[in-house]
Amino acid sequence: MNSEVKKRYFGTDGIRGKVGATPISAEFMLRLGWAAGRVLAAKEEGRGKVVIGKDTRISGYMFESALQAGLSSAGVDVHLLGPMPTPAIAYLTRTLHAQAGIVISASHNPFYDNGIKFFSEKGGKLADDVELAIERELEVPMVTVDSNLLGKAGRIVDAAGRYIEFCKSTIPSMMELKGLKIVVDCAHGATYHVSPSVFKELGAEVFEMGVSPNGLNINEECGSTSPAELQAKVLAVGADVGIALDGDGDRVIMVDADGAVVDGDELLYIIARSRADNNEGSPVVVGTLMSNLGLEHALDKLGIKLLRANVGDRYVLERLRENNAYLGGESSGHIICLDRTTTGDGTVAALQVLVAMIESGLPLKDLRNRVVKCPQCLLNVRTEQKFNYTESSLVKAAQQEVESILGQRGRVLLRASGTEPVIRVMVEGDDPQEVRSLANQLATAVELAYQENNKIL
Image (cartoon, rainbow, N blue to C red; front, side, top):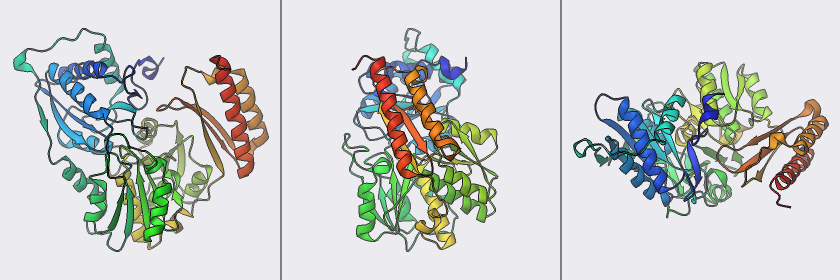
């Protein structure tokens, strides 16, 4: 049994769930802060140091206070960043020489969800053995250190400015965005006060959307998961490009001047081609099991091999490191440029695409058209109660039937989401009507099996 299976609380993307339900409660966060502090303090000869950042959802303030109290009681100093994108917290963890960074966010989920994610001192994912050590400490009675050893708390007042300068440094030093008209949708999330400034300071004309967070409207009909309003705005103002970030800023979807969505697969190809044109190319790009077959074919024409990882940025990172590669991503827009930063960063990825546009002299539409995507349909079946679809004979039979119909013309993928209570059903083929029909057929089978398993009928 591997370490991932043994974990009780940590999933592929930290700890996540509905606010108020264990473990996403104030009580648990207090203990989590203490447990993390105990583990991190044990690694240091002196006092440990942790940075904490969050997105804009209302529960973040509650969990920030609880984590701060827990860390302080374990004798660890805390540096508060306030609302900041997830990749900014990874960057600041590194540059502030902290032992860890803590992100309070549920990414693209609604406001009533929240979660916790840790970064290591190098700005990468926390090692499995460290997560397991934290979980072990959660089972130990909580004891506060002596008063003279309590951790201190302070706020990093220039956190936003530091991150803005970092983002700007990821493109050629003399390059400007003058002449570009850009619409930026921040999803009322963590990028609302930083990402528009990045593009403005580089000379672009920027139209802002989703920059009025109220704690409840994060990701609500906006951002990378709902780009319809961005598409309309791009057309209304005659913009060259639209940029849609998600609630914590680690994903990006773009919109071309005609209002068409450019997804993560297409963005990944554009960056890979740009790198190759600049002799910065790598023979390998990492996608996921969900990456469109059209991406694989387009990269193959460049002499670049697409390797597929399990869905989740953790697995993409693992494959990148295993192959000494630096560019990977997901169809959802989670793009990782390890030659620029240590984790997925929507703003940094968008900048790399803008560089490709400027250097090639081509609009986004022409750059994305080099990827001829295969028809693909993705459906979500909600499973609020426990359900192991792999043990269902009904699901197995339905999947075998769909696979036999498609033969070599397409692919079928079923997987449980690591961030939401859903089973994702993906069918890919050469005929869009057939693909949608078969996806509906398979999703119906999964839903019936779930209802039967949980006696909902």
